Length: 216
Image 1 (tube, rainbow, N blue to C red):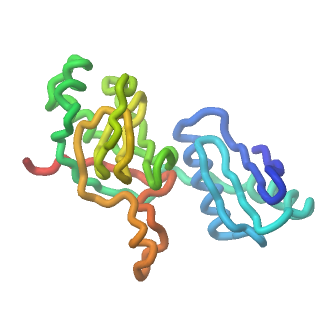
Image 2 (cartoon, rainbow, N blue to C red):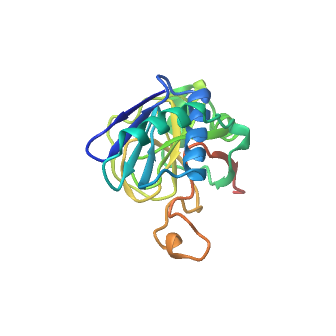
């Protein structure tokens, strides 16, 4: 655990050197502790694969920095089994599905079975609002991103890029292999304004996602 100042009013918490189940559990534990014990002046907590960026309303006193080092160092990790589980129905009819299967030497049914047969963890959210990088992805489905990205990928598209799978939260450019689509909204600015809805984002780092093939 390394807790250091980051700019005039930020604190950077580094907690891992590799991205795996242990680092994800560590990240979830730190975020939970900060939710339950928000430090004075904390404005935002931004999680990444191996670090958290804490933004404060002003400079952090040395005494508060020392307290953070001690408290965060003792925050217990939260195992994936305790994370929220989201079941996401997917229509496996993406424009790249057949070519993807051919490149991997698999049948289309094999790709669907392998992709939907795992409970994924949200490793990190980024690239576009609410876009989840999900893993671990079965090694038989690993494939580098397309050489020619699309200028527009529809929101809800389910794709594979390298060692991860994910869901496009908004319409945007993208180079992942599109194997399906979902009607489940991953990002909605309106949701943040609704009663009882704390966030515009459906998924948070550490959440679990299970894909369910939709009926044809």
